[in-house]
Image (tube, rainbow over all chains, first blue to last red; front, side, top):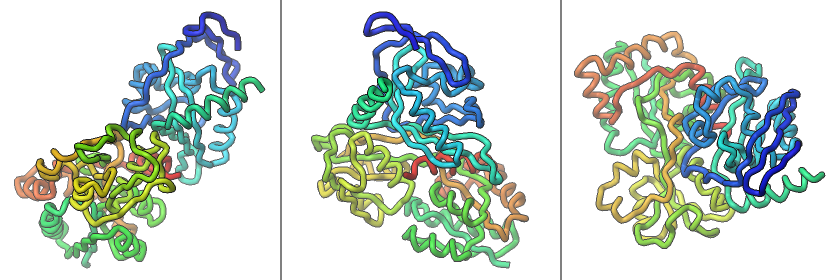
Length: 155
Length: 248
């Protein structure tokens, strides 16, 4: 990952696990989580978005059409350590529920924090996709996660 | 053959008669006796459902999960435009103006409604509050929750949004809403038990047709419902998956 620019706005190349990459403009601005809402999405087994609710559309800054068919990793913020997502995939592929605090990247380069839960969708005994539900985290959990992720990025 | 019907205890008391009217209407449509059993306690109702005492259940979303995945029930319809939403409210004069103002040790009042209580606790998470650092008192009705908010025994009360909106204006004026959920996809469903599934399409059709005639519309009105819409198997599974994510 390479980056340049001022502290407030920077261009970053994000490399994804599938070998693709993209350059994103990161803006150091947090968008507050909307009160009382849950952000809900579903993906297929490869992480391709198949369902996005209105709260997801509103918070991500993408339209519904832009989200459907995209890999969920378009929300990945470069401040999130790769190991967090490795843990997520290992957990859900084993058929278990994953919880974690995630800094998500918006289309406009700003970010929002969520408490995320991901579960496998099991139909007739087979995993057919995943449901991710995000809710409002506390400021203390965000601070703890920021400190932890910084350590993991430096490791 | 007599069928047994039960209804989640979280409907407003004003609509008890509506469910009896619905029961009579459904008996006529199906040409079969139906016994309606109402409960004022979720746990006792759950016990009897697990014992196999019911063929038809109008269930809250948390119980729907158990009915489908553990007991082989199938959801056939949901009420139109009636998602289950939760409100956390406090006294209008309280210094607490947002969930984040609530402190550890807060006194909460709630009913034993599982979905309202779960979603209510989720909406307290931004304040780092959970069951370990709050004190929840469970009471029999939302009116009693409101009374405890008004007399300041409660720092906050959990309400089903529908029930909150049915409180008198006088009561609502003395409270303020700290947060109101906007989840939209969690709702009650009418489910049929495993023994009755061959009749599920017939029952579903009768329910969908209720808005087509005056009698049906009158029955719906007495239950405070606009009508029913189809609940597909995948929609049911989706709602259950979503609820699963809300249970730690």
